[in-house]
Amino acid sequence: METTLTKGKDNLVSISMTIPAAEATSAYNSAATKIAQYINVDGFRKGKAPRAVVERHVGVDRIQQEALEILLPKYLGQAIYDNKLDVITQPAITNYKFESGKDVEVTFEVETRPEVSLGAYKDLSVKVEYPALEDDAFDKSLEGFLTQHSSMELVLDRPSAETDIVVFDFDGVCNGEAIQGGSAKGYTLDLAHSNFIPGFAEQLVGHNINEEFDIQVTFPAEYHDEKLKGQPATFSIKMKEIKQRVLPELTDDFVKKSSRFSTVDELKADIQAYLDAQRESVKKINAENTVFKAVIEASSVEIPEGMVNREVASLRSEYQQRLAYQGVNWEEFLKSQGESFEKSLADEAAVRIKNSLIIDKISKEADIKVEQSDFQTKLTQMANSYGVAPQELIKQFGQNPDFLSTISQQIVNEKVRDYLIANNKIEYVEVKADKEKVEA
Image (cartoon, rainbow, N blue to C red):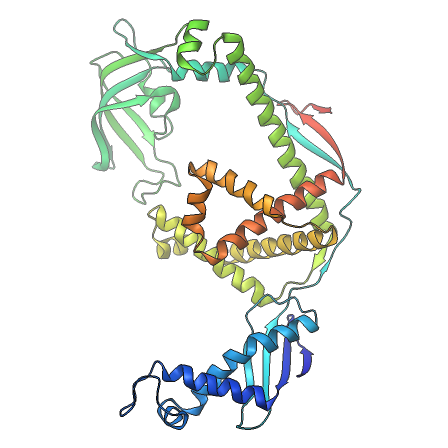
């Protein structure tokens, strides 16, 4: 087999090859036999029509194309291997000459992976900032645990307070018209954790049971309903109930009944361990991001336009699926975003591609490999997060050809990031809420 390579722009490579006549003829005959199995020809049983009849029925070109599909995996694969091409797209036939009894001439075009100019990625010295735990973090966590097990008690002898839960009726009016969906009976609202319009919950504080009153609010400028954006509104309120949370007493007996721990000390130790683990997790993520950013800035790569376009199409599809799941109309979303959305997609695509190419380059330079045990560990982690057995996860996704490729890439990404952390000098700087920095 003779092969000629021609490199074009945007990492496109043209591969011209000559396939011996004998193999081409064999493939042509096999293709004719295969096609005969699927066509109906008068006077012949399916699969028994002679080659000449099949040629008249479907055309010589159709059989030649089928023959090329038989030949190409072997010959194209050999050409790619011999020339050490890192191909990232499916080969496309741009020209061929297929004549009976003669060598076949075929030309393909493939896109190859852009070459990465990798800068320094080892022995860097970087400072990594991470937030210190808030002074009251432990107390808030403990209070959160008690709140989960709190009880509700009706309040009869005082007005509502900002930490109460209230039950009320309301009717909303904006610009003289009733607000669609702006009324309810017996609505329950936690005044300390309200997701209502800003200022709504605050005005329910200081009122008694059975009291009727109006409150004034202004809808946010970014509110989803065009009619209400930035508009003032009046809500008529009738207070029905006021409840307060009663926290349980923190005792060993309570802890034993409400958790997997036996004593208050064990519970407190677990809370502290959780907070410490959170802090270490943030430190690790910040370190990975800081080191990787330094590596990215020291490296360069020219990304072909076609590669960016394919990634943009993938990102656009992801956005469409996500918005459809949220019930957002895609066309309306595009109108609201304007041209900036397409530019943001292109920018995000370029960043994704560059990051991926640099990760792949480092993995080759550092000889990072994906082992079978890595797959098992990753699948177990994913199965635990989904709450299913690993075997069930494989059963669900095993039919997807991209599943293993995606898992493999995730493993490589994690291994490269771990490698960068282990092979660079990191100085951790704890940043307190008041911006005071403490070097670790």
